[in-house]
Amino acid sequence: MNEALYEGKAKKVYATSNPDEYLVYYKDDATAFNGIKKGTIDSKGVLNNKISTFFFELLTQNGVPNHFVRMVSDREMLVKKLTIVQIEVVVRNIAAGSLAKRIGWEEGRKLPSPVVEFYYKDDDLGDPLINEDHARALNLATDEQMKALKQWGLKINQILSTFLKEKKVELIDFKLEFGLHNGQLLLGDEISPDTCRFWDSETGQKLDKDRFRRDLGDVEAAYKEILKRLTGETC
Ligand code: UDP
Image (cartoon, rainbow, N blue to C red):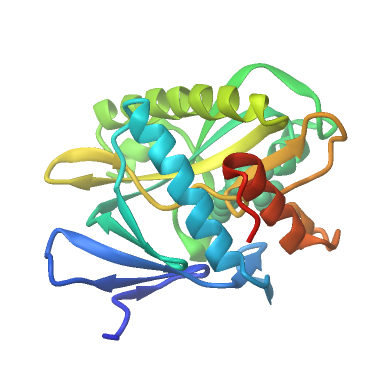
């Protein structure tokens, strides 16, 4: 295989014979706290590729433009080439993680309505929280694109949380990344237990990367459980 064009914490990106498409390879590597904690989660690459494929297909069916083309193998998906907007969009339904700390709420307290946040994608700065004015000052996106990021974030939240509720999974919060493809804003990156918080609706059990971040054990089993709830597949 060719050299990766880009290697991130959890994925590698390769060029393909089609200049409009990239191949994404999902690794088992896991990091947390801006790369300070490192490890691997057995089969994570396979599980996240399958879980992301499922969510991108669900979003496509519901009219959300995204980069997904098709799954190619257990660890690989073909995507449309994007110029990534350097903003992480986080949508939250229930206070957890950094929000719980920032506003002094206990984890698990329901927000009265969904909260959308923007973070500046910059590892050296530790991805700081920003608002629309900072995004304009930093020339990260136009005002119109910022509005679209928020609207798509809320729409995706509605689609995913409604679907997951039926599977007895609570969508606590999640992170999205977007990019431009021939001038069109598309959802990119991945949607997986690495980028979402999922809690079992009945037991409250964490079924996501917090099991790795917080050393709760049974990390792989949690990712497997999410795939099973989504597709019925055991892998
Ligand atoms: N998240 C992510 N990548 C990041 C930061 C956050 O995927 O670099 C996800 C995280 O998994 C969670 C949501 O975004 O579902 C909100 O994360 P939070 O701000 O609470 O930060 P954390 O507690 O994960 O540091």
